[in-house]
Length: 74
Image (tube, rainbow, N blue to C red; front, side, top):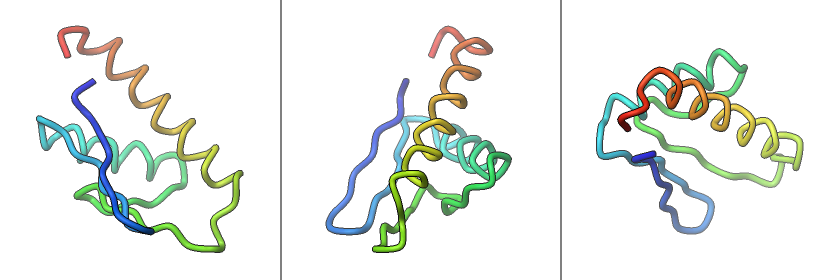
């Protein structure tokens, strides 16, 4: 997938070669009850638990699985 993350310290940003993929990830995460900024920004804090991280990973995995099924050329 043309998605990757960069960050420094507690700031993380999801990037893509296609901006629409980050926007779609934003909406998929919202559907899963998670909030990331529309442009892919996330901030980590001490209140984030392993369960929060697991939920984000599961949401991104589900998004990528669906995206791959719908658009195998990516």
